[in-house]
Image 1 (tube, rainbow over the protein chains, first blue to last red):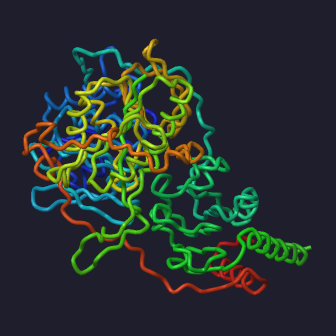
Image 2 (image 1 turned 180 degrees about the vertical axis):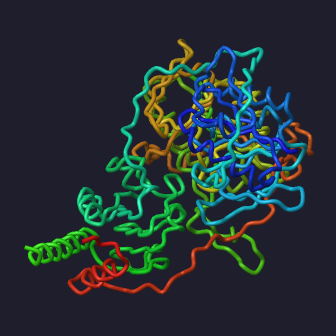
Length: 321
Length: 266
């Protein structure tokens, strides 16, 4: 029986639980024993999904104490000899995984979006070169296989109900973390753009009146998204940034307005079913992968389409009256 | 304050092309760029030095010799020293092997703080800051948007961090590894006219493995713990788009298309 350890990020518990799917894809439904490390003390439904759940004695440990959490992972591995260690590629997971891999002297693959096997070997697939390439990577050496996994890259499709055995881990020789939280302000919880079927996404070409996009999003029952340029200029929050350094989205319809479509951006929208691009340059990279290209000014397009939608709904309402 | 800035030169990803017959990246004639987040880190360090002129900034890069013009340029922009670790035996190093080489060099240096970018444009793993911090036993923070304070006497840095769910301010004990987020407003300073052709060769050191003295088995592909099995272009199929213009006819066609596909709820 193989052994899989999943690190539960207390700020992304649900996304962490989905990582059980990675174990299922590699080892099969019944091929592995699952272990969860809930160092931060929050673990949601993990008690019903894992075989074993570790908490930290004298804990919980804050997720920014990445050095101690890495020691904790090392300590657990020395005791349980995992075959694979999977960490969500969240803000904190991306700091914890490299530290732990260095301690374990094992290879680490970042931002994995697909897994498979070739004989006994575990294959990990990740985007590289800003999403332009997909690299298939294997770990060498004595293991364990270690990876950070892109949040929402996997969905645990057929959960098996379990009753986890709880263990409190006593990690020795903990140093003071060297990192102290002074202040934390939660970001407003907005609806996640990854959950919207329709995205109206704006780039540099519509920056002078970005808010107009809100109206079109409302008319099409969708949400507004943005390119990196708009976010870097402070005109939109990072939470709605699409692309390799933002969010990977898979809406039914993506309307890219004033976005040229650099490869990092395109990497974020490859799963969109339909793509309409509106651009003053019909040779912009995004146009070659679009279903419909509308050449011209993005804001004029938004205004025109809004008028068309409103005119039509007025007619409809008139008819009913 | 002595700041070491890790600086990677990356290929301009939008210029990369792929040879489908040989299954390799065409790297010839591809421009090298300073990794944008690393450039933000250097610009932040230079901004700090402007207010604290007795600070010392050294950049550390692992790159081929072709990186030299970029490093000369940075010295002319105000950094004190550039170190280029360049050795053919490093080719193919993964983040583990890279971090170990960097750690070996950093162990020989006296510094208060390591600055770097959070991610790079090419590999984009973001693993080197963490692996290096662990190898050196240092505190780590990445995703930094603002350096609020850097105080060698107090032995702390105060930084603002944009995490996924919250904005946070941390105090980090020095020496530490600090990874910055890209900030287009934080630009490298211009080169003064009189410095354009200044000879800066005495401010650049080139090191190879003969100086660092690592075992050859620790370097390059041999020293890596991960191996790329294959690389595929994750190419989106080029489509034959319907071409329209922003005019009455174009908008009307888009409207009817949206209606037909069921995106317009009545």
